[in-house]
Amino acid sequence: MSEITPFELRQMPNVLALINKVKEFRLNSRSSQQFATRPWLFRETTISDKYLLVPKTSSENRTYVPIGFIKGDITSSSSLMLPNATMYHFGVVTSNIHMAWLKVVGGRLKNDYRYSAGIVYNNFPWPELNAQNKAKIESAAQAVLDARAVHSNASLADLYDPLTMPANLLKAHQALDKAVDAAYGYKGAATNTNSDAARVAFLFERYQQITSLLPAIKTKAKKPAKKLS
Image 1 (cartoon, rainbow, N blue to C red):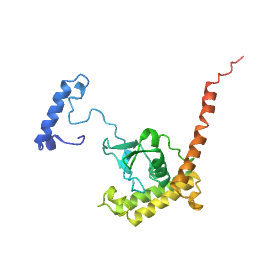
Image 2 (image 1 turned 180 degrees about the vertical axis):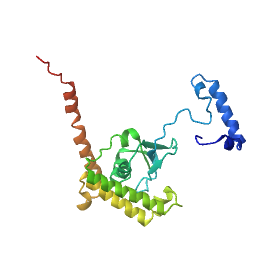
Image 3 (image 1 turned 30 degrees about the vertical axis):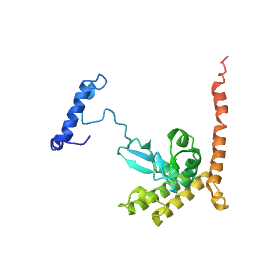
Image 4 (image 1 turned 90 degrees about the vertical axis):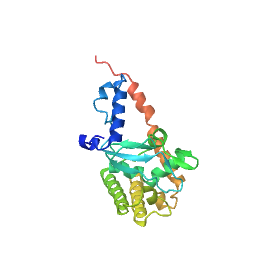
């Protein structure tokens, strides 16, 4: 409660009682004693100004995982967060090509998608980027957020249910998909092979290209420097 005032706190006796218990606990804990003087605050706060909120589990019926673009709020253990995210990161991660990757390499909870940082995100092969492609992705990503804002009374669960997804939001996502495909140089959509399998095959080729460079980089790093004569 970083912005609460003493007056507001005194108007909530039940909350004040809990804060006193936090203070007592911290005073009796060696590792927490220094935090006892501010029991209304977390011991540590690592909240970025902007981050992506990715649910760990999402329905298999969704075309897109409803990823949030959050500013200065707190998340829970049911989600993952990407700190200091930009509109570009939001655009790529919420695109169809990233969804195809999730469906294949991610885990499952029953039949629902299971997103992980170590397997899904950290191994995801990002596109080689230039300023023009980045600007197009950012513009299309903002259009997705704008389309969501039109339906401010609806939850993300409502907006991303295939049966109730608004037409303007679907259209914005499709435009974003095209912008991300262009950044990758992916041509499947234009050759009638625009399937998840084709996208993932393309991404694995990209992944192989990236990882094939690692042995050469390691060898170069281990090579002893020439001695000056």
